[in-house]
Each structure stands twice: as structure tokens, then as C-alpha cells.
Length: 291
Length: 272
Image (cartoon, rainbow over all chains, first blue to last red; front, side, top):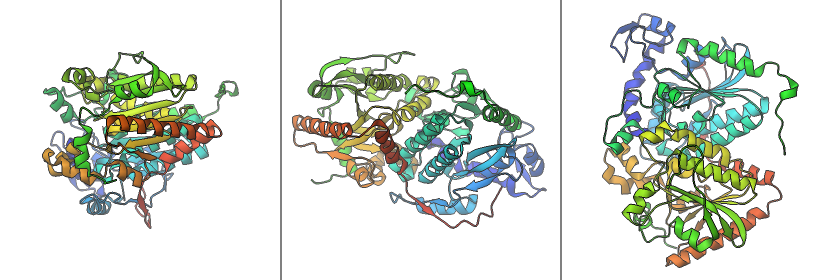
């Protein structure tokens, strides 16, 4: 799985939280080209470097601010926090420390919002929290979100990013893949729309479950998306892989995503798709099943 | 029964004399016909599937294939399937649904294969699709983890009404070796990682993640007889379900309730 290289990046990427601390005068350094960027302008540019085009990894709340209609987001299930089901060495300390640092108890934020006026159940994974690995909390919140959306007849939009299943929760984490996929299936069987937006990086057990199950799968440009970690594969084949291996462009060309959407067009693309699916429909062609 | 640590079981399940899917098929099923191919790309020899009779009832059998010799293992890619293996499994599962016969999965894999072709052909999508389809498959599904239950590659064949494990089988989110590499930067500490991860049949049973443990006895023949008896009992129980909806609802709830977390007070002043 993609855990090996991803865990090591945690420290580096957490620096990208800094521009969101709303200190207008602050200067941040682009991880891609080293350019010095004014935090305010960088934020205005949706955390895309104007010089090299590198996409900064977003905090979940920043993503929601970029996508949801103003003041429309209402958070759900914010009170779920990780336990330590297999007493894994150092896990409880690590989650407690990150909860403080990142400002959320685990790696996903869920709720309802409006996007272009369309009421939508939304979930955003946040790589700043243990590389958004999926443990019980992530699985439970997403499952509840799908169940809520099914009950209320709402579309679901998920922004995925993840290092995969969270090994510190042992089998509890692996089975979240089945749990969330099952809830996504019920949502689908109710005739409702599910859009996934793959963001950097989406790997391992999240790729092998709900990330790949959207009716429509969008991706940000130059995003790492895959099942196995690049280094694991390189170790297996004894060669270095090309740069675009497991990128969103690679996925698109192999037929596993519908469209690559630049960050500044994501909102309008989602709005367009949501409106098309959630507006008035001809009764005649509504879902019919032969039982 | 004395419960051995996971690190010791790791050695037991790698014994090549241990029964593998071909042995189960020879001993438990009559008139077995192997069916090949995913109809999209190729036939993955890491997954074996087909139809036959179990105690006179038609069933579909799917499972990971390993070998006893190096040649057999190369041919079966050591039980590590590519996407086309999972797509073959799904094709056979849907066929079982169409013809109203139970599906019996034998799980024994170190994990889904990690390679260039696997990524190009959507390993993640193939596994995801198994989870998505098996959860609603309108026929009984019983999965038995016979040796290694390696992460997503095992889970793809273990979304079932009944998941059972052999006494010495292991089922883990990550290989102990991978875990040791990440945690201690030392893959040689895999035995220690195996014990830390809680991956034995007894662990999973205590977590409520599997429905039963099959005792292995003292010989392969006894092991296979125990598997036969368990399969017969489990299929009879499923056959007694009043209808498919009830069975599917139970299947859903079984996976739905997995997870351990805390509920905290949230002043939610962190809004967006």
C-alpha cells in the first residue's frame, strides 16, 4: 500500500497550513519552485502557486470555503474522535497532538452545504491529519454522511485524499473500506448522485473503495492517485517509474476518471453537474427495475 | 485450544503442505468445472473460480490460488491478483446470482499485486467494485480465510454473509513486514509487528469481525473435514433466512457496525 512514502511526507506538507492563518502580511515559500509568495495573494489564488502552478494541499475547511456557497456549510458528526482499538504504540498520543495542531479530531470534515444553490452532502478529507489515512472515525463519518444523504435524497460530493487505511487501527481500518462502500451502494441504489473529486494524494484503501465508486470521478491536475505506493512498485520491478505514473493524467488516459478540473473551475463544474442531476427530470425515464 | 501468537502462525500458514484452494476443490466439491477470464483483458491465474456441487447443491467457488512448486507459484503470481482477477471473481459472482447458487470464497493472499500493469488497469477500481457488488449480491456468500488475509486484496473476496477463519489464518490491514518498515524502519521486525497488529482469527473473532473459527485438527484431512462441516452448517443457516432482503440487511449491518471511536464535546467554533 502507499503508506511508506506518504507517512514520511506528513511533516513537510503540514507547513502548507501556514498560509491559512489569515495573517495577510505573511510570506510562504512554494514547495515546488521555492518562490516567495504573499500568503494573502496565494490564498486568493486558491493556494495554487502563480509561478510554477503547483497545487498546495488544502485544509478541509479551506476547501469547503472555496466550494460551498457562502455561509451555507453546516457541519455534521464533528464530535467523533479516534479511539485506540488495538492499543497501537504511540497512536493515542499522535492523534491527540494532531487534533490540537490541525484543529479537527480526525482526517475528514463532513456536513451539508449548498453548491450553486443545490443542497449537497459534502465530505472533505484532510491530508494534514495523518495523511488522511482512514480509521474508524473517517469511515464512520463518511458512512453516516451517505446514510444521511440517502434519507434526505441529497447528492454526495467527496473530496478524497489519503495515504490509505490507517494501520494503527488494524483490521478496524481495513473494514471501513467495506462499510463506506456499502453505504455508497445504498445511496446509489436510491438513484442519487455521487461525485468524487480526487485530490493529492489519493492512494491505498481509499482508492480501492469509495474514491473509485463515484458516478462521476473528477480530479485535480497532477494529483497522485493509485493503489500501491510508487516505491513499493519500483522495489518490485527494480526500475524507476516515469513522473506521470499514477497521476490524474495517467488515470484519465487509462479510463479511470471522467475529467481533470483545475482548481479555479472546480466550483462551477460541480455546480453544473449538480444542477443537471438534481433539477427537474422527465418522469417517464425514472429508474425502473425488474424485480 | 492453545492460541499461538501471530508471529508463529505466520510460519504455519506458509507451510506448502497446508491445504490450498485446489485441495479444497478436490475434496469438497464434485463435478467441478473451472471457468476462466474476466471478459475484458485476460485470465488471471492468481484467482481460481468455477462451478460444482457441494453436498449435491450447485455452488460457485472463487479463491486465491497459490502453488506448491516455484513454477506453480510463478504461474499463480504467488496468489497476488491483478485487476482482471478481481473482475473475473465479480463476473462469476454475478453469474452465481443469476442462477441462484451460493458463492463460496477461499481467501489466501499476501495482497493485491503491486505493479505497473495493475495500476494501469485500475487495481483500486477493481477492488472497490468487488466491495460495492458483493455487499448487495442477491445470493448467499460465505468466505473462508484459509491462510493469509492480505489487506484489500483479501477484503475484495471477504464481503460476505459469513466470514470464517481457519484457526491459524491471519487477516491484516497491512503486511507485518510493511508495518515494521514504516513504524520502525526495519522490515526484519515483522514478527513483532504481527503481534502488535492483532491479526489472528481469535483477535478478529473477539472484535466481532468474523462469525467463526474453524479448528484445524492434527492433519490436513481433518482440517478439510472441519471446513466441510462448517460450510454445510453456515449454508444451512443462510438457507433458513426468510428472504433475500433480510439476508442483505444483516450483511449490511454486519459491516456497518465495525469501528471504535469516541464522542467528544465539540464547541465547534472552528467553522469555515
